Image (cartoon, rainbow, N blue to C red; front, side, top):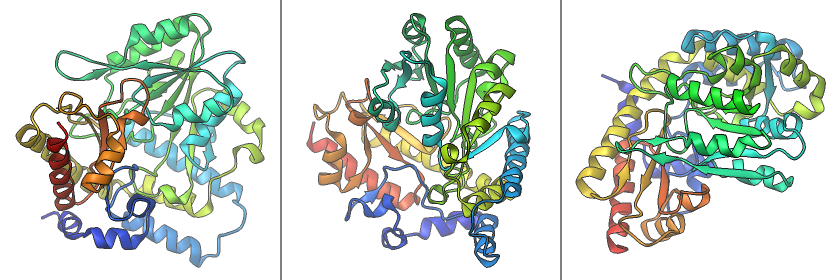
Length: 391
């Protein structure tokens, strides 16, 4: 018996509120199903690493040896989990993946070049460059005849054709839950090569795939992708430590690694000692816990699909191939396009509204499935009730 599953099923909303995370406290009185963090606590090796960091008083400025150790742990994990060989010295530390994104468009994007962003997308991918006056060209994804969301490859190439630019490849995709095939990634690579584009690969959700399917790191495809890719990863999503401030920028060529190093600590700073220790523990000792989480999440994604088919026919949803995020299109069921406030105020469930996720998002919402199944059922009961009233 999966004893962790029994523990997670027994968690209550009251206990999750008591923990105090933003997910459960920003909108009082609601079920927290919006921001991408899990309700399942943390892996025992990660907890031990956090306590050991405090006990050893390792709270000063980060020593270089600790940064090197995380580079080694990251490289070992990428090789073990995905078969991607990277140089430990080419792993740079940052506070989070958004900081990696900021560095990419600040220091690698040429003046006058745009960012090309497939949508729907994580909202800060639009707002952060806009604050610096950088053009963001949104290219909505398309749903195929089987209901699977696909990149609009022609639209991406057209957007890059004139000036090149930086293509944001969120892989696995947030919020669509796509796990891109090798063929899809190779077509993206061909577009980037033809247009001279750089690619920012946000692979923060990489370990969160289901069954035998495995994420393919985009930079690992070929020498060409290694040359034009900036990859960002973190243990924060898969091991539930987003508050500990640690992410990695993985460089697949020496020139980019040297450029990052030359930027200096005051530009690239942000990773904490405790987050770094926790990430090392996650990458080295967290596989067993993660695998149990994935079994539970697999049950949740299947449960959601079954409930949608039974209780909300007409909703369009493709079961996520990766991540714990579900994208649900209810545009055929209601004329309301302000879904986040509607569901927050009437259903008392906090979700991410598609209206905030760029072109093609209105009429849909993102639901976080990383919650106890009884709480997921309660959230779905509330959501379905409100949507049926607002047809």
